[in-house]
Image (cartoon, rainbow, N blue to C red; front, side, top):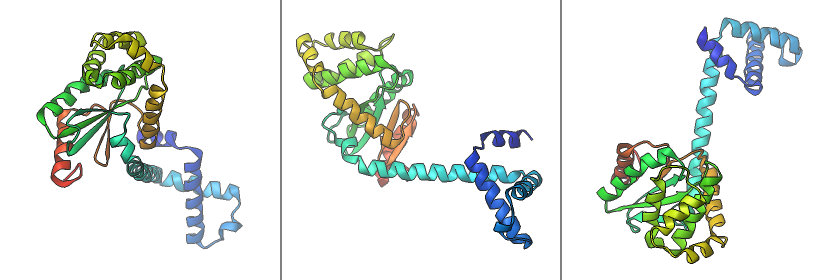
Length: 262
């Protein structure tokens, strides 16, 4: 009883309409008493209502099938987006690369400096890099947690522009720092690495930060990303801080058989 009620609450009018119409048509044809054109709206509703009350499990079955089709369609769209965006996703001139730039296997991470899960996942990423000299890690600034995150990302883009050799130090300092990441905290972290303030501020006045962030937003939208951290390994999108072991397994599978599951 509870399960039927829960499924019923999730039904939207288009789903109900498809169930009602299909059920009524099938019943009419099977009964042979009338064609679809001979049954008025009231009769259809009465027939369908009685049928669903006698067979409530069809609602759950219909929703299960609808969910399956939607997931399948989303995955197909995601794979197409990965193929269409592969060059920008893996080789953009605006991205940050850590680990081995020439590595045979690539892990892409979309992150936000104010994301608590990203802070925890940082250790996983560093462990992966340290344990695999053949791993290329691509970082994508994906500020989704408010204005402070956007400001921090803008500073990060400027850091990578004027002193890419100091980006890793800056990134770790800001990501693992306490409190809100914003323009002030990001500038502080950048200046502590020894970057010249004038050069940094000048870089922040260019359009590069906006173009970089917009590029990431576009890719993330195509891939259906809704939060951070999110990863791309091969042709698979991995959402959430799934942990070292799961990422390691997927990367190993990519090396061994060219896909994330052997």
